[in-house]
Length: 311
Image (cartoon, rainbow, N blue to C red; front, side):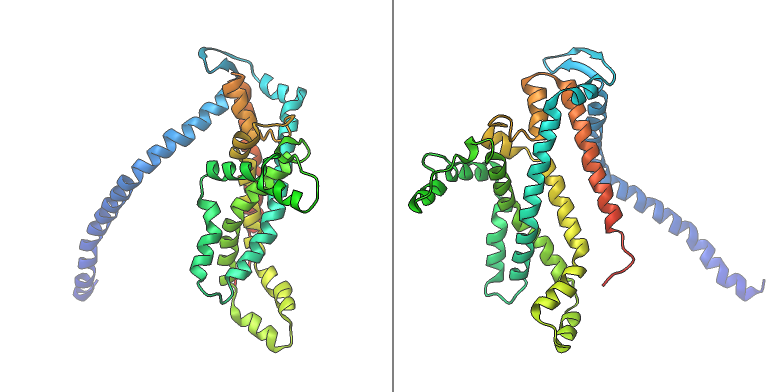
């Protein structure tokens, strides 16, 4: 090694320890900032999940947790033998299906509307997002007034049209549909914002080139915009499905799971089993099954959203 090479290498060797020390210092600083969040995540999420998984194999009451006894898979066997879990899951899946079928097309149409040249677009977007950020208690109370079978506003309009009044939330055939419509009304603004983000990411040059080639607005929408929004659409479908599977407020605030358990959504059923029936082990088993269902949907999302193209 020549003298020139030694002179060029020496400063690099001298700076390397400083760079390593700086990296260690930055790592410690980053961990110090992350530690409170990681601690909260551990205490309020992962530890409760571990306790829930343990309690799913126990038989105990929240009033006397010291008397808990290990029952193995008995709680899961009860879910197969009794009809309550199957009926609750069926109601929840139907609820989620109705919500998704309403939210996806309406959210997409609203996104197209918001993506156009509107005056005061910010105000319009705020109005559309207001139901999303409004408390579930307020929304449920408002819809209870609207759907009241005796003095509700909707039944008042129906009477003016000469049609018979509808029972709505007091009917086993209508209650689940009504709370699904209410949930979709509250969440459609969120779906519209997600679709709007996808629309604004679609290159305008593609639509302009298609219009120059003679394509109509409908052809551009159906053959260019919709295919390019496939990942966004799938994302919105999965988000809305997972949200609907975990819905609790509509059943708790509007119908109390009735009439005739027609709106007994799975999370509300877990609440009743744990805090009303004092069967916390069975409620934990129901929660584990729901967790696995949601996890399966999330994994399906990750598999379907993988793509080898971009725009």
